[in-house]
Amino acid sequence: MSFEPITGRYLTVTVGGAPRRIYVEEAGRGRPVLCLHTAGADTRQWRHLMNDAAVTDGNRLIAFDMPWHGKSLPPEGWETQDYLLTTEAYIETVLAVIDAMGLDRPVLAGCSMGGRIALQLAALHGHRFAGFIAIEASDFQPAWYDIDWFHRPDAHGGEMGAALVSANISPHAPPVERWNTLWMFMQSGPGVFRGDLSFYTRDDSLIGRLGRIDTARTPVHLLVGAYDLTCTPEDARRTAAAIPGATLAVMEELGHFPMSEHPEGFRPFFLDALARMPMPRADAA
Image 1: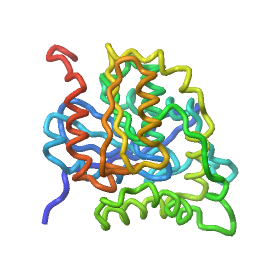
Image 2 (image 1 turned 90 degrees about the vertical axis):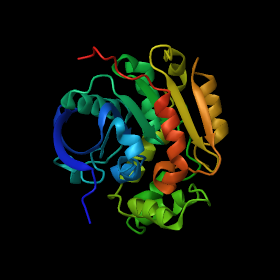
Image 3 (image 1 turned 30 degrees about the vertical axis):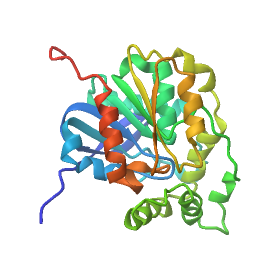
């Protein structure tokens, strides 16, 4: 028996003029790769890759729980607030973590809402990053369901969320990882999944910004699962086509949570994506 190589710490940053105590996990050494979780979940989605020596050999994987998620508590006074994530707050949080940790142009890898914000950052703050791996990411995906169902007094929001996303997991996923993935959603805090989906399904501002992305400076590689019903391969192809120079791979046996639902199936796609990202210069500080 031995400890896993993942280490966890807490980091306090300022977002919206107020402190946010954020839980951060790391594994590996070398090029920084900042990993963002999906809506309604947390950094546990990245645990398999953070335990994979082939991934962490030369890459310092860093994942953090967004405020309200996982081990990152909501801000003071949350009991009187209605949590609704916005693009602006999401961007501010990611940049605050980068600044606080002193990360010099990390690669950003995000899935689902994390992939959406990765593309927003590519358009608005591309110079801060070495490249982007946008997983299950599209320009805009309106809700085909009523998001208010995920925060009602007569329904368990976590179980409702797990029921919804269960259809987005590939039938090829190992059963144990399917249920581990669903467990994260079952544990989601009250209203958190609804608040994330408010950002994901209502903010269409990325559509007009895709043309700003300079892939000659910061490459963008999209990954999409063939069994993803929320961000379909067609959605990802449409988005990639709007970004000059972007590349895309369709993962034939994977769904919306590839790093969590089927880590072995996702592994070669992620390694290929990392290989497409530039390594830091030897003379970089």
